[in-house]
Length: 111
Length: 116
Image (cartoon, rainbow over all chains, first blue to last red; front, side, top):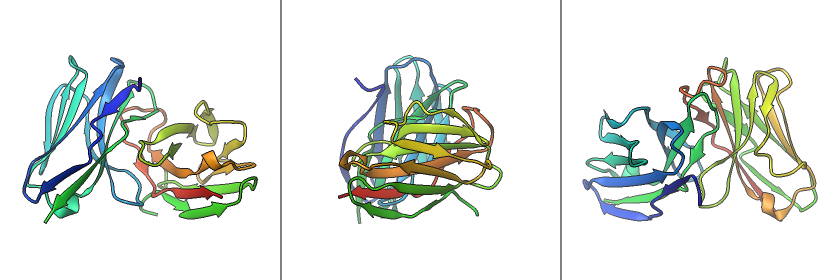
C-alpha cells in the first residue's frame, strides 16, 4: 500500500462548478501538505502549502487538512477551463526533504 | 534565471546508450532534488544535494544512475547503459534552505526520456 493515496479520476466538470480533490495518507509523521498543479508536458507548480489541520484559502482555492483522519482536500471554486490540469497532492515529514506524492487526478473543465 | 531550467526537454536514446540530463536550479538555492515521474504517476524521489554534497541517493533505482553537482549549482543526472524501464520524465527541483521541510520545492519542466 502506498503512503499517499489520491482519488484517481479523471474528473470532468462544467465551467463554474466546484472541483473537489482528495488524498489520504497512512504515515502520521507527515506534517506539511501541498497541492501542485501540473499542466501537460510541464513541471508541477505549487498551488497551496499548509501545515496545520483546518482550512486555508487562496483566491478560488481552498486546502483542507484533517490530521486526525489523515485526509486532505483541495476545492476549486468557480472552475475555469484554464484549471484543466493534473493535480498532485504531496506531503513531507518534519525536518525531512523527500516529498511523497499522490498519483494525481486529471481534471477537465468544459467551457 | 527566474525558475528551474532543465535540458534537454526531450531525449530519445537507444537501449544501452548513456544519457546525461542537466538541471540549472533557481539562483542561490542550496537544495537540489531529482525526481522520476512515470506515466500516470506522481514524482518519486531519486536524490538530494545540499550545495555540492549529495546527502541522499537512496531513491536511485540502480548503480546505472549517477548524479553530481560539483560546484553547488548546476546538476547532472547520468544514466548508463539505459534500459526501457528508464523511460520516464526526470524532474529537478530546488529550494532555498538546506533540509528545511517548510521550504517549498520549485520544479522545472523536466526531461522526457524515451528509450527505444
